[in-house]
Image 1: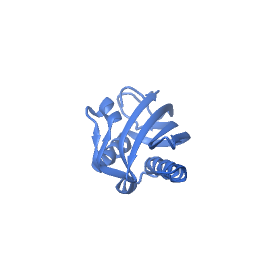
Image 2 (image 1 turned 120 degrees about the vertical axis):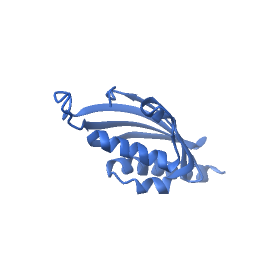
Image 3 (image 1 turned 90 degrees about the vertical axis):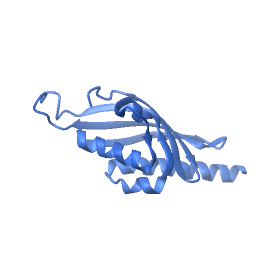
Image 4 (image 1 turned 90 degrees about the horizontal axis):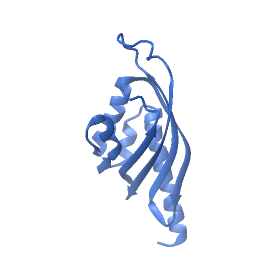
Length: 143
């Protein structure tokens, strides 16, 4: 792959990650069909779902889980980082805002906007996401 091909592949892969965040912001799980490989593994889901998210259905389950627990969820990508030396990897520094759904048990903690941040690394192969790793700061522990 020459330098121009690598640079354009880097930009294409960054666009795939932008689409991933659009799926969450627009609550549009159909985007996952376009950008996620059937062999996809989301290593970050292990932290709150007990096992990695697998395939397109795993990504859709993550979105559904979020929508079941939250009244509001939005992401802003502050920076996407990729290199022609490793065109299959894209790093994202992002911030999120969420509002948990109201519960009768703990109403003083709900309906309050929570800001959190994260760094994610995505591996892309043949135009589809195949692996994801996340480090998140500020996600509420009981969601």
